[in-house]
Amino acid sequence: MPALCTSDVIQRGCCIAREVSRRQFLKNVSALGAAVIGGDLLRVVTRGPSQSWAATSQTSHTLAASPKTVHWGHYDSRIAPVLRINPGDVVTITSVHGPAPVPASLYAAGGIPSEQIPQALKDIEREVKDKGPGPHILTGPIYIDGAEPGDILEVHIKDIKLTAPFGYNLNWPGKGTIPEDFPYTALRILRMNLQKMTSEVAPGVVIPLSPFYGSMGVAPPAIMGKFSSVPPGIHGGNLDIKEFVAGTILYLPVHIKGALFSVGDMHAVQGDGEVNLTAIEATETIGTFQLFVRKGKRLVWPRGETPTHIITVGFDEDLDIAAKMAVRETINYLHEEKGVSRENAYMLCSIAVDLHIAQLVNGVKGIYAMLPKNIFVKK
Image (tube, rainbow, N blue to C red; front, side):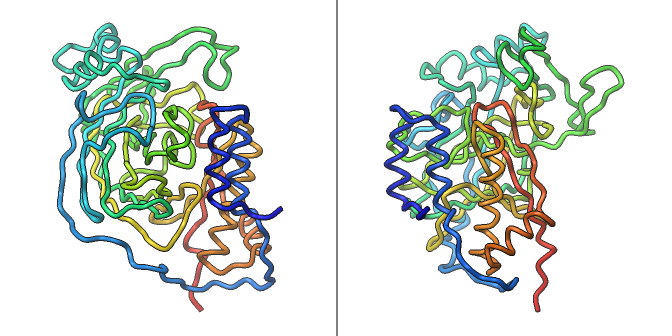
């Protein structure tokens, strides 16, 4: 089938709020990279960016979570930015998190002393009225000067620091991977040793912590309106990919002038799949990000990069379709960025790429593909 243009994707986006399901919308968007291009030989070439990264400064900013600097449960292009920066600037962001809909109150009911519960979380619970449809408290959005629709926002995750020694895990009736086996609510307040970076989640069971942000995203296209913070999508959002720790990069397609970047849903540690609905959800985190704008390149779906791997993603209510999308995205990357024919890229996906389940619990399920960088040797 012929590839769709970007306007086709945006036009189909309005169908989410009408008669077409989110699954069909995701299928339509994934078709952007589906056209087959010929080529037989495996070629690995070095390609520079079509234009340089847009970076005019490296000013440092601080953004603390407060009722005036968060939005609760949704991404939306109409949210006014709470900070404006230049490309290349560094932003240190405080985010708070807790069991919705009354996180501070539930922590108190779970035995956490009031003085240990972040004041910002108490204030946000009390003062923020526009909540939902999702449960996540997101700090932002941040307006990046020069970011335009069609650009790429490059998010360098410089540091993630857990600052509250407790978090929670929750399963909820009707949610999770096997809700029929656990048809009740179970909320667990879990203590963390921030010096050892561990949590004893059950007697004699100690888990190493590996913090990351479950949700990092830009504003979705305006036509999508107020978009729940639960499903991931073309804006990024609730990716729940545990590889996005400090020292990694997230690439996001820009849909709105200024990009409008937000973060939240901090995880102290999570297994692939997030099967019972939640990770160890971290109460308070300070993250440091450096944000760049890339001109002359286009993405349809988020991508990522670790020191050792390239990450591509696939999203759908059907896990098989999500896997197909992740494979196609990897083929697109290999062909566009490395000069590999599509047929040989498909081969590489089979012999060198690992598929992981990000999560099974956000309605739209997530697969991410891990392509090792060390297979590319200059000739």
